[in-house]
Structure formats: C-alpha cells, structure tokens
View 1 (cartoon, helix red, strand yellow):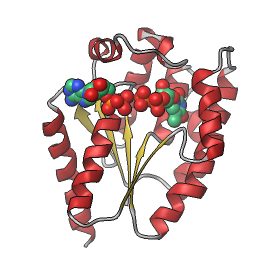
View 2 (tube, rainbow, N blue to C red; view 1 turned 60 degrees about the horizontal axis):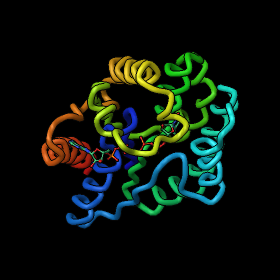
View 3 (cartoon, helix red, strand yellow; view 1 turned 90 degrees about the vertical axis):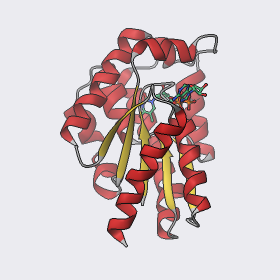
View 4 (cartoon, rainbow, N blue to C red; view 1 turned 30 degrees about the horizontal axis):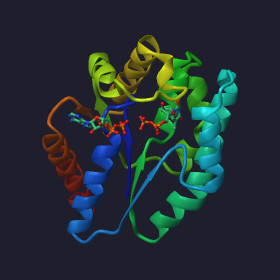
Length: 204
Ligand code: ADP
Ligand code: TYD
C-alpha cells in the first residue's frame, strides 16, 4: 500500500507521517517512511539545488529537477519497498509538482500531469492525505524559522498552491482525503489512521 501526504509547507505532513508509521508498526505492519525531494544521494543533492542554492531557477528547470529526484526515489526506494510488502508513506509525491509548479508557478495542471504521466501511470498512490491549513496558520507555523527557496515565495504563491490542492481533491475524491490541518495533532492522526484501516480492511 502506498500512502502520500500533501499540503503547503508547515501543514503537518512530517508530524502525521511519523505518527501513522508508529501506529501501523505497533500493529505489526512493516512501514517505510520517506520524503520528496530526497531519499537517495542523488535525490538529496537535487534537493540541495532546489531548496538552498542562491540563484533563480527557471520554472521548467524546477519541474524537471523535482521529477528527476522523484524518479530516483521511485526506482530506488518506493518500488523496492512495495515489492517487499511494506506500507510506504511518502511526505510529498507528484501531487506536489501539480500543486506547486502547476498552480503556484502557473505552468498548468494538464502540462504538469503530462510531465508526470510516468509516475501517475506506473505508481499512483492508493491514498493521499491533503492536510489543509489556512495561510494565517502557515505564517504562524513558519514564524522564526529560516525559510528555504520555496517557502520564501510567500503568501500569494502558497494561496495558489493551496487552491490547486483543493481543486485536485475535488477531482480525485476517492484518492485524496482532505484533512483539516488546524485540528489537534492526535485528532488528525486518529482520522488518518481510521481511513487507512478502512482501506486495509477492504483489501484483506
Ligand atoms: P510539514 O512537514 O508539513 O512542513 P510539520 O509536521 O513539520 O509540517 O509541522 C510544522 C510545525 O507545525 C511543527 O512545528 C509542528 O510541530 C507543528 N504542527 C504540526 N501539526 C500541528 C497541529 N495540528 N497543530 C499545531 N501545530 C502543529
Ligand atoms: P520540504 O522541506 O520537504 O517541505 P515541507 O517544509 O512542507 O515539509 O520542502 C520541499 C519544498 O519543495 C516545499 O516547499 C514544496 C516544494 N516542492 C515543489 O515545489 N514541487 C515538488 O514536486 C515537490 C516534491 C516539492
């Protein structure tokens, strides 16, 4: 089973991914928790370029770099773990490109889907949790932190990204579960676990 977490920066993906992993492991499942961009040496190096290099990057270059890191991650981490029977949880996957580059950078959803068709066709997530927070919470949660290149894009950019996620959630109702990310951490975790359990039960 392949589960992804999506949402704007600071929406709680890392927190909830970790809690879901712990819960599933306590029930005896083998779980791999991973993140994009990253997971392999090459993908981590690409992450460094994308988030920490101090030079303007062309929007389409950005797309191909995220997709390059994604392919390394898919082939070397995600697919081998799924083959071994692990539940794989990824903090971001192709919906991030659809939202950030398709909507945030305004490159278009259809164009970004076309560029991501390899991932969409070969390994779509079984379940995607979109943790939705308002921009005032985004600001609050990132306050005082050193911002990376994407986080520095600011409120207008993140608003477009958020609307992109909401639009995709309306389009992919079965796969994408919209979760109110401003609720209490434990309540969100319980909601997420119950949905995962429902899908696992339906499969057994
Ligand atoms: P992301 O991985 O989406 O960037 P994180 O899980 O790192 O988000 O959370 C960002 C910050 O917000 C962290 O300091 C985390 O402890 C806090 N946080 C996460 N979820 C909640 C929540 N539901 N309520 C309050 N604070 C939260
Ligand atoms: P990360 O620190 O992993 O995000 P977060 O703080 O939300 O946990 O940083 C990844 C950044 O890259 C984040 O701002 C989202 C962005 N991103 C894209 O723009 N496109 C993509 O395809 C991916 C995977 C991430």
